[in-house]
Image (cartoon, rainbow, N blue to C red; front, side, top):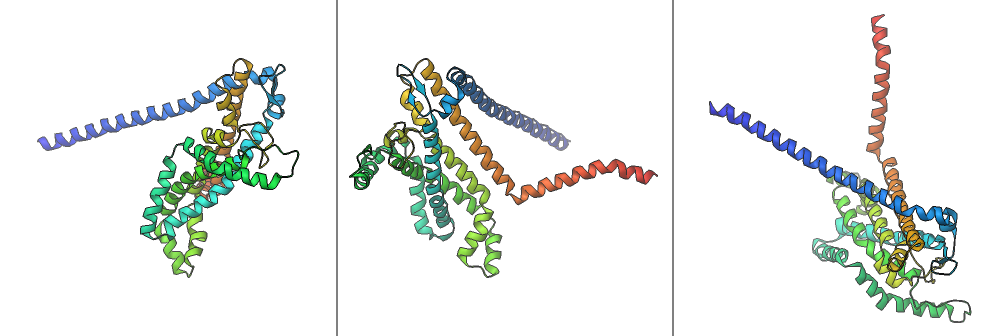
Length: 335
């Protein structure tokens, strides 16, 4: 007699737990959406007033940044170009190195060697960004200054930067994104079903051919995710770049002292006031828009190249067509 009651009681208890868990998950998702919406709204509210006071064209396409002058100028074109070019170069350097290192750890390295390299990569991820900046000042900038002296020794127009230039910033950014790209790409490669590799080898492909023709394409989704996170890390970095880039507003040439969007905010927010402060919020809004465009763009590329997504889209289209044709078919059967 007690057994059926215990079963019913157990089902009710399980149902209550599931309902509670569903409520908790819903609340967490709501707060995540609310956070994104709040940040977006805050940036729009605080970033747009300067656009109306100074002018969209003067801010985005002006090349002179003199916010504290008697006749202030708020052109951030060189700052925008520096962020775009610097991030792109860092990705071009860091992503191939990171992906190939992930391939080495996942498919090539002996277990003993991988057990040494893997903790080193994870340690690299845990180093604070200011340490990268300090190492850049102590090691990278002097080397860049020697190179600068060798190239521009006889130049009368070049403004020497002491090695704090765009190249130094790009190298530091490339190193900083490596742990993100390596760890996520390695996880994506290890998640590829073993049957893919076995089938490729059974068909006569070499190990290297299997890696580049089978494993990497199969792990493309995870690798693109790693690139997206790497871009976010690179374009959002401030402290290390402030220390090694020189933080001067110039056209982003390799040996020019430059300023990124993030460093423009960090270096001047402490003393900015009035319209100057509002323009710094506008720079933050521009940075926010850039990150959103990059995320949406890379996600679209990922979906466009995903065979499974294409099949789902095709199946949904066929189902919709079948649903639309259903009344006509029933009418034909009736006649």
